[in-house]
Structures are given as structure tokens and as C-alpha cells.
Length: 154
Image: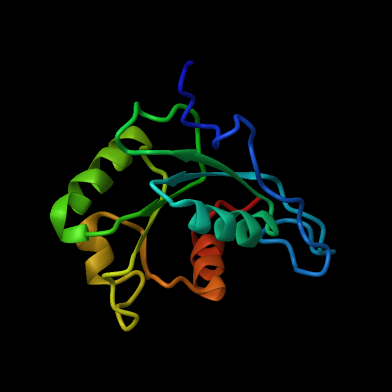
């Protein structure tokens, strides 16, 4: 079987249609979904994948999945979200490789080791080479705020 890192387990793309009760992330002002934003999610466990699908899918994001141990994920993405268990143990190297594989694409790093008081776009993010860092457990508002700031305007 050929591994396709752009597809989740089961081989289909996931992402929900925009919720008409929630304003679009960018684009239509009448609450309709904005243009689809392809988002690559790297090294997320099934529970995190489910949350990301629900939260980001409402805003018109189409999620694809990959593991850093696999081949370089093909395709163009508007955003990369990576789950890093231990940033001090190879996390910056993983982020560097993702940046090289997806030049110009903003990266959001998630980790339970980031303190909630750390500025999401501060010194730690710059040191790691990420556009934003978010602590886990992850809040929906923090994730969507970061995504809104980083996704291209349509």
C-alpha cells in the first residue's frame, strides 16, 4: 500500500463545511464559508485531530495529515500545525525541516510543555522558527485566533 501523507487514515480528506452561525474566517461577510484553506497537521494524535477538524473545519479549513517520520508531504498548504511533545528534544530541528519542506508557510507549534503564559508570537516562537506557539491543552479561541492571523486573506 502506498502512503499518502496528505490523506488521513482511511484515505479521505476531512474538514467540515463552515458553520453558518459562525462568521467566516476570511472572505464572505454573510457568514458563508470563505475559500477553503488547506492546512497540514503533523504528528497529531486521533483526539487532537478530531478537535482540529471540528474547530478549523467550521472556518473553511481542509485538513490533511502527515507524520514527520514519513516522506515530505506534497502539496501547497496555507498553514502547518505541528504537535511537538518535547520541543527541547529535537523540536526545533523538526520545525526547521517542515519550514524547508513548506517555504513561506506559517507554522503553529503545539506542546504541553509550553506554559500558558508564553506569548504565542514571542521569543519562544522565534527561537523555534514557528509563527505561533500554543500550549496544550489547547483552547479553541487560541487556535482560531492564531489561524485567523496567519491564514491568507481571500
